[in-house]
Amino acid sequence: MDKEVFVSIAKALAIGLGALGPGLGIGMIGAKAMEAIGRNPEAANKILVPMLLACAFAEAIAIYALVIAFSIS
Image (cartoon, rainbow, N blue to C red; front, side):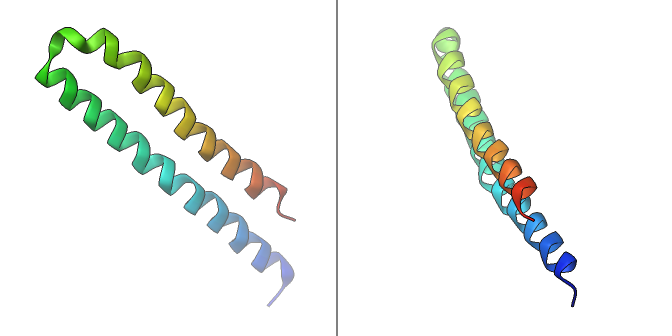
């Protein structure tokens, strides 16, 4: 097979696997935040900021995977 095929497969695996973890993480963060707000609605303001920060950190990992996928040549 040609080198371009292997490069394409490597890029697909890098972004696919690199987005899997953050996707699951963001889903779990959102689910637990909604569960916590459901139990104690008055704490919604205290839960929102840490939830958004955790989502941003998880999303940064997906962006790193995208950068790695683009840098594979």
